Length: 158
Image 1 (cartoon, rainbow, N blue to C red):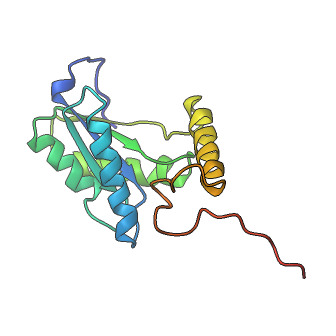
Image 2: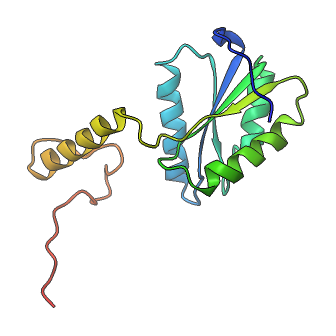
């Protein structure tokens, strides 16, 4: 796998944020929303969403879009929590095939989110928000809005 040299020029670096992909369009649209928000908070101008499988854009489509937009380096970032087979095998293989169509463009597949210390705060924030919602003190979160899923349930006795 090609590896880019240390560089700080964000103008020629493309970012591909890749999730698993879903048959549910609403799930795929959540990645697009996340990527749109990410663009507003990062110095990278070239950012594309991708789905590993089941939906478009694919990694190959997103990689090509980055190159068309001027990327000389493409960083593929798995939007996955844990380092399973998709991170160790599937995403690197799909990225390598995509890169082969763009000679001279370097690429890197980053680690998944994993045990990143900021995840503690993310999890705590989600728990706090859901508890506030069921207490009637907050609206449903962006994931549960309109689904009725964020509700306290009591298990029936058997």
